Image (cartoon, rainbow, N blue to C red; front, side, top):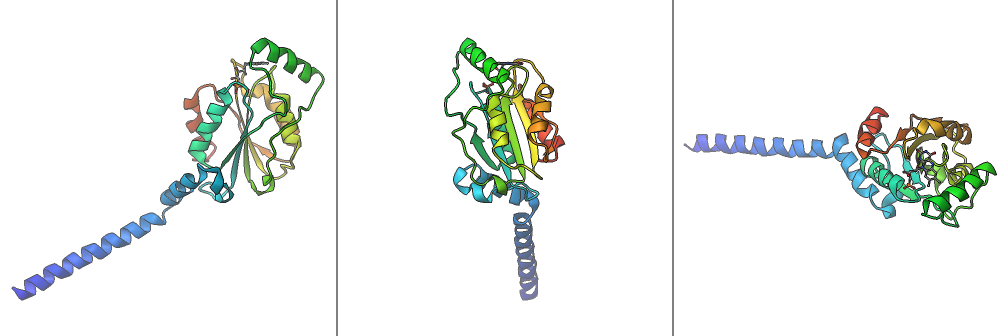
Length: 207
Ligand SMILES: Cc1cc2nc3c(=O)[nH]c(=O)nc-3n(C[C@H](O)[C@H](O)[C@H](O)COP(=O)(O)O)c2cc1C
């Protein structure tokens, strides 16, 4: 009887040791690490340590006048983590379509560089920079020109995304490529449907 009891206790101990071992293994698995990193990344305060599963540091920079591109940017941020920053101009654009159309047409024709109030201090530290914008006049807004010309993005991966009233992101790619001559510019997304974002990020190997 005593022998049987000892044997039973030994088996129970063996089980409990095995299950401890499993939970430690889970904690160090990539999945667990990624979840922890994402939790940190949702707050700007912990942004200095934000990175992807592959250890790359991500910035999501976006310009949005009426909120559509912002929604896409937030969705990307939720999925890949990293830091997120809104590109703002010193003088905000009118939200009235006609007023905005007149002003931005003029800006485009005169190749203006609107002054930005946004400054990314630690741009050097990022490996991957998402750049989001609405399509304006069949290209990226001039604020995006100002933004991309403000930094040395050499060696970084730049990932464009946009929203639009129907134009495809390809209409803006000549501008983005020439503004980022020494970067690796990946396949951009016209993110008018937020459901397209996850498959796109998966295809790019970021999820
Ligand atoms: C001045 C202006 C120009 C636009 N030009 C285009 C265009 O050339 N092609 C297009 O499909 N949509 C165009 N749109 C529509 C915007 O791209 C679309 O509404 C976008 O989702 C707005 O993004 P936001 O809410 O982030 O500002 C234009 C909108 C404005 C205000």
